[in-house]
Image (cartoon, rainbow, N blue to C red):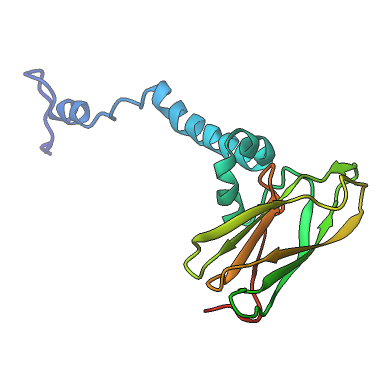
Length: 187
């Protein structure tokens, strides 16, 4: 019987050429496989620090307080809150444009006594433009842990165009309370 396969010592084996051409590519460099996980870990550490140390971040860059508030993580550097903020416009007579009564509660939710800073009150129109601002001294200089203090401020001659009031502590970035005017405010 005759064999269909013959072996020859002449020239290279065709299977050897095929195997040589089908070699696996070189493995990726070791440094490249470390960069992506390292960058991911650094990004996670940055995000954790940005969230976990937000008080320190806002103290260093106060303009970031709005970003944290928009993300649902307000930062209160004062340790005090303004709550139950309301306003009421009293009608004026003649050339008097009337007044504005502003009521709020200053609350210390912390476990430490806190100094109560001067308060800034800004009256704004419907477009958010500030029509006027004033500073007001609160009735107490210090609040104990868990204490609250009601405050009432009267602003005489509030502009007729006023549609909102912004009240906050003049020092720091925390404790901002925003409200709309009642009564004779223009829309």
